[in-house]
Amino acid sequence: MMKINSLKPQLWMLLLLGGLLPVSLARAQERPATDKVLSLQESLRYALEQSEQLKKARYDEQIGEQKIKEVRGSGLPQLSGSGSFDYYPSLPTQILPGAMFGADGDIPVQFGKDFNVSGGVQLTQLLFNKSFFVGLEAAKSTQDLYRLRREMAEEEVIYNVSSSYLQVLQTQEQFKTIDANLERLIQLEKIMQLQYENDLVKKVDINRLKVNRTNLQNQQQNLETAYEQQKNYLKFFMGMPLEGDFMLDPDTEILDLGNPLSRGTDAAVSRLEHQLLNKQKELNNYQISNIRAGYYPSLSAYGNYSYMTMRNDLFDNQVPWFLTSVVGLKLNVPIFDGFQKKAQVRQVKLEINKIDEDIALYNKNTAVVMANATRQVQNSLNAIEAQKGNVELACDVYNTTNELYTEGISPLTDLLEAEVSLREAETNLNNEILKYKLARLSYLQAGGEIKNLLK
Image 1 (cartoon, one colour):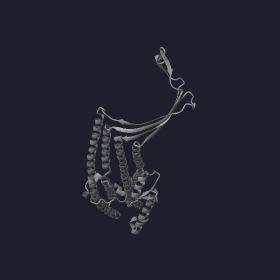
Image 2: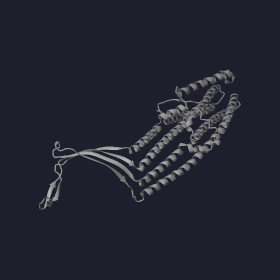
Image 3: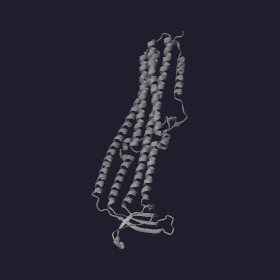
């Protein structure tokens, strides 16, 4: 039988390629390829169209538009119609003094007819009501509030989709690390099996290698599960059915931040959250104006035009219809309300004070988020460079240890340790790249620039 030591380098290479090819084909079968590749911008545009959260926000914005029309409509002429039909099987009886008719005692008298029919229209027009004009301005401000909430929902969707997209993308990269290490172990196991058959290694060495390979395959399976879960979350944030399938663009990059240290935290004032708090404060001021408008008199005009008839026989045309019409003005002057409005104004002012505290808290929180994101960006950049060097060193150690093991100088344990160290170095590099991208994403969100990802 031919011994392993007599194998030529070319044969070793053939064995290596023969081991790599089946594993690569197996990996391709486990994760079927798809022709649909979505870039980050395409995913974001899809989410902005299909997200249920955004659809609700757009409905709220439309509600704001209808509220303006509702308030404006209260200042337009109001026209209403009315009608009545009364039938008296027994007319009501009144008691009148008999002296009115030259008789003694009281006399029962029935007034009216069996059938009473009336119908008419009434027109009212608001002439002056300060609450109406305040309400109209408040309704427009409310529409702006709904618009800001819709834009905030868009930013939230963009952040969630981008964050989930990056995590799925990094998981795809992690497969490459595990696949490469698994291929190395499987190839090494095949070679050791030949060595064992030629009595060059012990059974315990093969078993040790199988344990490492099984552990790595378990990691691979766990990563497969995590990958599918992450894709499902991405589909959820995008508003995509779970049955849909796609691949991600591996060349996705987050926008260049420039020099984060030179930008400070001034961008916080332009963020939608800050605008939303100020808009809520504005609405509270409108509420105060509306309460104080209750001290003003209100004036409206009205007119009524109606016909009526009273008959003993409903179809007796000898009794005509009688016209009644009236026009007038109605003035309402508030005098004293028991200080209710004064208490209401104080309540709203206290709500404004709370919003001022929310604005101060928001500014501090934004400063913290931007500072932490800036620090994480810088730290991740340094860590990425360090991990790249670490991966190169781990790769050199593995290659050197592999050569020494092939020559019978280094034990198998050293080779397995070198393989684990290389895998950890590659995993750490992959994690640092993800941290860096997520930190850049957080920085864009904190600075109110996350919508630039759509460009």
